[in-house]
Image (cartoon, rainbow, N blue to C red; front, side, top):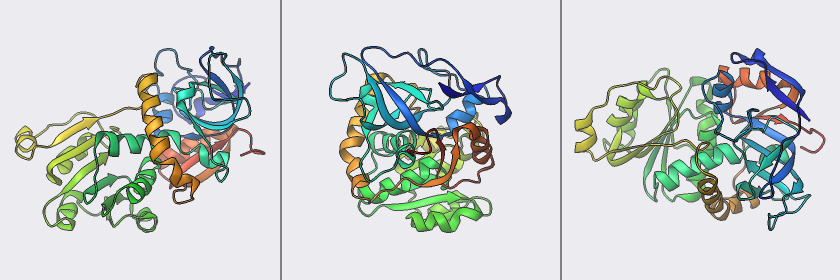
Length: 331
């Protein structure tokens, strides 16, 4: 099969479009003919040599894939060859074929294209997991989302709008993306380049702070996050793009009864991921079927141009997801 292969670890130039053997799949898995996949921040980190795949997973980049089931293991119920699915995978998405666990599949509604479906598993599931299952975001609460133009946060804005009543959504974004973030559904947008976000957030919440924060920046933002986190507030840490080391004010943490919760989706067990996907399918997929929620696509590139997709992501030029069309005729 054709796939994106790594010649080494480093910049986008280490990625090459070539041939490799088809993936093996066992009697409890399915084989998917991939029509589209997408670029995620963990792909970039893995390419740099800092995020190896979990044991047993493909070393090929790619954490999600949309396509049709090519073959079904003999012990797999329900799913059949030809079914249109999008899948969360531990690796291997940047290829023409990928193996997946049946519990990690989501049936694609007829109204959604393969390109759109390829945007759902990694980012929407991450946002759903951290905000609602771990962060317990509830009606009437306020949430702060850092980095409003990325895939996770464009998904998070839509999820908050669809699932929560009277939710105040505050988003930090760069100057160039402020207007688009507001159009997507944010109540307030803070320009992190020119404004100190914690002061802005406290002003927007009458000094109370927000109940939930979703952050991928890490160390440099911790103090500010704690300053604008409300009493009993929950900070969900899903990345450390600007650094993992920092000091923490434990007195503030205790007095305000704050919680800091870390989460990584990729390393969770097969069973854990299946439980998350089952909940997501029941609660969220109806919004996609009705057209209330739509995956936001920034760019569509051929799989062979995956390196350009990584350059776009690293430069933060994208707004939404960067899709790689593996089979453009069917995407």
